[in-house]
Image 1 (tube, helix red, strand yellow):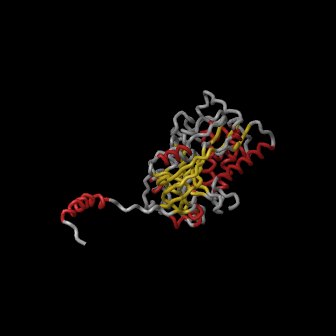
Image 2: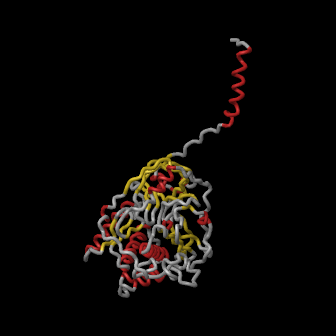
Image 3: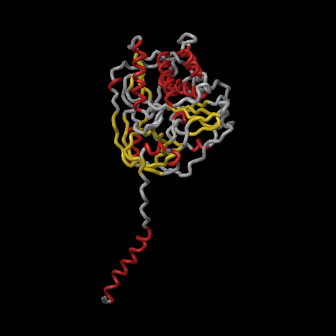
Length: 414
């Protein structure tokens, strides 16, 4: 077939105009592969460093948690910890976190830095995700880490996975390594979020704590801490506790007879914190909007200070969401966790054991503070001063069972 020469000119000119645009188009990147929470948790180390998609997963945030949960996985911890990339400044995440890290005098090194960098897409979906999981619930009494929503989301990000989590110890009980993620370094997998593909908020039912008596305002001489608890804070949070963080639990313990379990547990929690002039205690209190929700680059190296056991215990406390007596109680909770982590006689406690003992000590703190009530994230009432006799223990234990059922801690697998 032949064409007239004049007919070739216009198509040829258009092809030259279009050519640069065609050459500049990059091929569309393939979407990260979809995986399930259970697939990751079965062999977390196999997914280490991989960018994946987790579709329509349940996400919760609260007092000491920020995680994806799937209660069908039949693992000791049925969840993947969540973190934003370093420097994100997001609002969602735990309000209290204890993070063990190799101290400067540790005989072991931190795990290797992740090989795959992650940059967060701060679009509307991420904004909705972060807002839904950080909006405080409206309750009348004291409520620890109580946010208004859970979410269902599709997330893209990097999996960090390890075979074992927690503080490793040698035959003499001396720490020989640390791995894992999240609170107490007990999670074998975490997702460092790259993007939020979709998000749907689900309001949490707080009707169980809707009618409890409101907490009275802190007295003028309370310094923002407990009415019986008093001082503490180590100077890191001016005006919050005074000067000696250990004084909080010491004062609370004095409300109970010496030798009682309440006195013993509160003293034990308070005594882990550094006294003035003791920079090598190994426990650091980090106040303010502490960014405990980030995969910090500082995790990839040793902490700056020394520690008697070679482990630095970083206690993050978000003062933006822990006001007044809540900050005192949260500090006591952190102290109980550090005390248990340092206690070699316990023999490597699992997350469930650590959580149960910490919450029991937290309840003792509320009682010593003479609180009218104390609720925890999810709308579970841990304490109400109208309870009498055996109802106190029964109701508190029931609240903790219900609370743990919403988390990734599997009470059926030890």
